Amino acid sequence: MAAIKEYALLCLENPLLDIQAPGDDTLLEKYGLKPNDAILAEEKHIGIYEDLLNNYSAKLIAGGGAQNTARGAQYMLPPNSVVFLGGVGDDKYAAILQDAVKQAGLRVEYRVDKKEKTGRCGVVITGHNRSMVTDLGAANHYDLEHLKSPEVWKLAEGASHYFVGGYHLTVCPPAIMALAEESAKNDKVFVFSLSAPFIPQFFKDPLDATSPYWDYVIGNETEALSFAESHGWETKDIKEIAKKLAALPKANSKKERVAIITQGTLPTVVAVNGQEVKEYAVHAIDKSKINDTTGAGDAFAAGFVAGLVAGASLSQSIDQGQWLAKLSIQELGPSFPFPKQAY
Ligand code: ADP
Ligand code: MG
Ligand code: MG
Image (cartoon, rainbow, N blue to C red; front, side, top):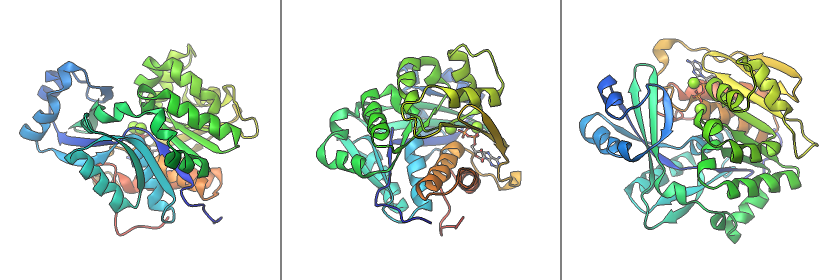
């Protein structure tokens, strides 16, 4: 393994506290939720957090897609390899997050907002489905000023790899673009996650502004389909979509674009440069061992990016992603087993 620079990986997105509980159809109906979805909370949803806490057996778990990925990447890398940026409030929820990242050995540089609450993600589990409703709160106030503050920007300059979660497109596109441009200018590695179907659907323009900077783009099958639909690509073929994602115009021509689409238990589809497409089988596990698949994709991205940072090959990095996802789905929420297991 090549020597890894201190804080080689810098991640940006929304730090959230997950309020997760088993629910039922009545609860979904009450808030007008689909069984399997990820949405931003509107006025009518705001009651769900207290509802989950008071009337269901809710658990509080550190969440936020890219923050999960950052924790997972740090799990696989030497100490002090990963730093995460995002916005939180000054409240008990932020303290829970601080505690979780500390245990994971993840460095965070949070923009702390005195007026706004830490963001919350309500997760309603019905059978194998999970419906997520996010109230971004303080995460929605992340700004370019924080990223460009001398101490934080120094971390950005020092990093060789960036991981940005697509959910941040609803928050602060200028911060994403600053990292994207810094990456291309200095031939760094920029990894982007599509995050959720609503991102290509409703945030197409800011998403398209980032696409030339993607060295790696990661999504699941529903996000890939949503991207294709919002771009008028008349195909539902995941391999075809992966090829097209990989073939989109690219700012840094020194690196090939790689598009990676995970599909739950089905093989992961990987397209390089719009031409070659390969499939990689997942690490199968017995159904009885699965605890909670929330954050499977975040864990996959974590193992994958840790591989890139450590200088592993593309196929090994994919395999590390499958491996870490398999570990994570045996835990509650997007977590990883301790004592640590080695790949
Ligand atoms: P997301 O959580 O974003 O929907 P996926 O469901 O595609 O992402 O899962 C990402 C990865 O997690 C898969 O490629 C696979 O490696 C792993 N994974 C998910 N579900 C399972 C499962 N039931 N068994 C084994 N691996 C799984
Ligand atoms: Mg999935
Ligand atoms: Mg995902």
